[in-house]
Image 1: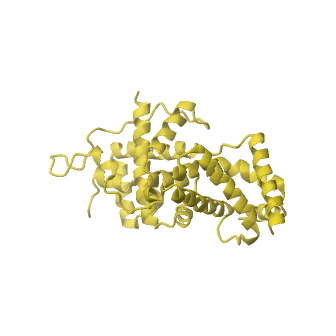
Image 2: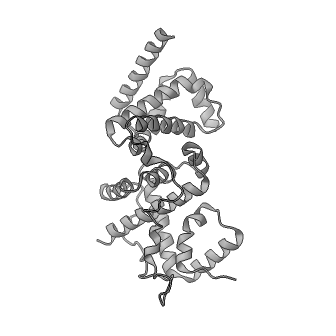
Image 3: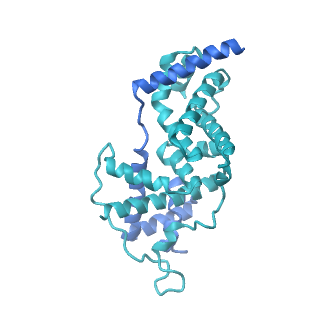
Length: 84
Length: 205
């Protein structure tokens, strides 16, 4: 049985989070995590990073912007009808 | 996809409220993604508008094989690539398996092989105590993350934006970008490592 080094664990962090490790690999990964506060902290940092990054989106637009986009669509529609 | 079906029908009927909903949900995201390809806000806005027109034109032919969101982003990426090619910028964006100029940024945290403590942490990662559990990002935190993402290589920036910012699945991103699962995972790994580093620096000040 090969124990993971910290460096190997970190290198496989994304694979682990994506669920692409084999059963055996995942088991070694989690064993190491359970025994290693450094790697645990790092993983928590990555999880927080992903959470915060996800908060960047979800910004809506102003009603003026919305109106402008709708107008562009209407203009295209009317132009399109005469084209076709 | 059930919600998609009703929305798609409304879009096919030319329902402006339905388009308004799409604009609210995705317009900012489309501009953000386009910016990675075209690098100026006016062009990114243009790409997003072209995308909406293409969505309007093509909605009758949308078969629902992917989600509406994936379909819209696919169109966006296509329009953005076209613009980038016209500007001669596209070469920089060829999704590569491994950029030799950009090794795995996580290796620097560990003593090198041959060293007495090879593969162990040089210094212990600390707990990020000062992170709020808020629902909204402060302006400073947002700025830190946006800056970190902006400084990534275009490929890494693209993958982290589509995966972690816009929350497309790995499969959707592979479809939209035309890359393998492994490719996008390697890029995502490196991108996340750099953003984490930026946050670590920011939080330790």
